[in-house]
Length: 231
Ligand code: MN
Image 1 (cartoon, rainbow, N blue to C red):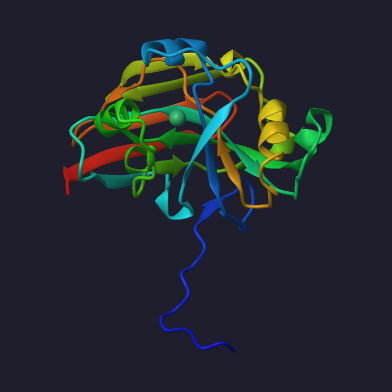
Image 2: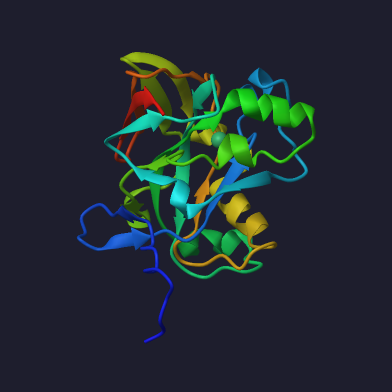
């Protein structure tokens, strides 16, 4: 066996509904501006020519049901509820008509964002990494196998301390599940373990230490997150 200068990190993983086996996570791709009303609240429009992406490290992954600290370096940490696609088979330059066949399942996810830094980075025309690739910022729930869910008109909503803030429908996504896999597979050899966070509806907003977040998509397992003290 190869010696290592320190023990290899364990691959982050997610639970799968109805199974003891977990889903090892490889890469986390995130779609920007995929709901018209959210793009507008950010002062933009959805690009109808092509979707765009940013990424989070797999080590930004956190499971549902935890208290996670308010992160350093921000005074405006925002929630974004999203449908997450879990890829279960290789896909490279796959046609949209075949794209649904490579999906292992779906989950609810939170794309937590340092909004103040994102706004500044946009103004400076700099990359979004400090705003988006935040430790513990990809909070993702139990994966429901694809046989048990098909994206359609399901409600997608998020509440903070019991007050609804985001309330949309999965069918409001401009770039649909098959479109996204088809497009992204033109740039990457998608592999089992890759996740795609598909964008958020309107109503994003700040959270504070002590807040309890509930994120839901009808037909999928909900995600809860409690915001702990600032680090
Ligand atoms: Mn997002």
